[in-house]
Length: 80
Image (cartoon, rainbow, N blue to C red; front, top):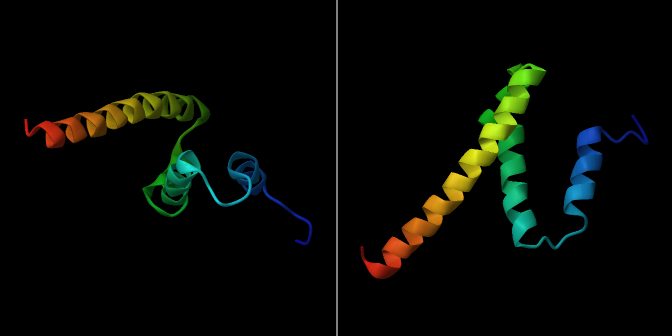
C-alpha cells in the first residue's frame, strides 16, 4: 500500500538512522537479519508473558556471550 510503513520499518529507521552504520549498529543489523529470516522468526509463537521472559533471558545470555568472547580473546593473547 502506497505511503504505508510498518511499525517494524519505522522502528528500524529510528534505531539505525542513515548509513554508514557505526559498530553498534553493524552488530544490531546482523541480529535483526537473523531474527527476521533465521530461527528468530519463531519468537512469534510466544505469548506476551513468555515474550517478556524471553527478552529478559536474552539480555542475560547476551551479557554472558559478550564476556565469553572477551575471555576467549584474553586466552588467545596469553596462550592460556
